[in-house]
Amino acid sequence: DGLTVYGGISNVDQFQNSSTVNGDSEETVYGFKYSMGGFTFGYQRSDEETGLTAATSYDNQAYGVVFAVNDDLSVSYGHVESDKQGDSDDAEADSFQAAYTMGGATFAIAETKADNIAYAAGDDAETTTISMSLAF
Picture (cartoon, rainbow, N blue to C red):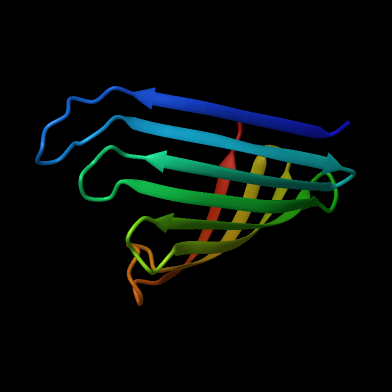
């Protein structure tokens, strides 16, 4: 009870030429989500073969946890990491979020920090996002 398991496979035939494409595009994704009380935890992995001659493979993983404090307030944390074949620096990001709903209005804030964005050391960023949405 509270467990969701999923997976998927994709294979796209690509026109192959020697300059940019040397194979088909393939991706495998699997993960799970588990909810208990106010907590929800999720984990996902994906492997991607692009079929391109430049970057041919990515290994990705992500996980997150959400705690619903009450019907109106939730806080969460998420982490994503991507390993590109041939690059020594993994791209990764961490994000903390909070959201409060009052009637048809939702106020949210997210603090996100990303490292090695383009799979290169020092290519980092920090972002704060504040949003409000209204439902009519």
